[in-house]
Image (cartoon, rainbow, N blue to C red; front, side):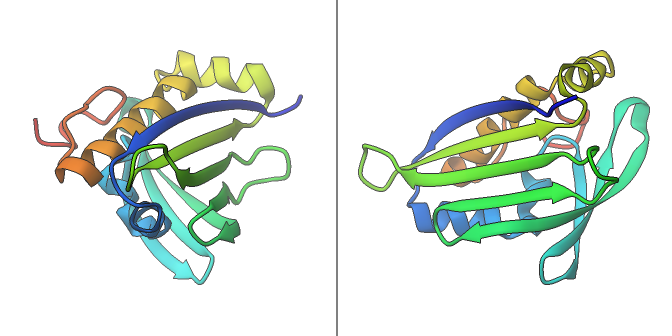
Length: 159
């Protein structure tokens, strides 16, 4: 089965350079991603993420940076058996307002529609999670804190 992409876009009131720099430092991910509890750098293009999955189960994923174009694009993926990896592509570009950035994230889940349905049945609907994660990124970069709690581990972000 083919990958099934999910995408979302947000405009952030910060420069492209600031937004890209923050996102590219993968150790910032736990600050806004709803289920990522920690990120450890294990190589120049490799990180290990601890994710709290459904039913409170902690899973460690190795992530690999596959492409980077400064202030423009970041692509990364899980290191998994061929055909089962999840891939993300995040693009950054100036938005119409001065000093604003449009961030577009595309996630490709494995196993096509079946994979998306499976994740949704486990309480992790990919489209809603991508939108919520970008909303939290916006809040964090503009306000310095996360207020949006949907599709996040209970208690992870202070209310």
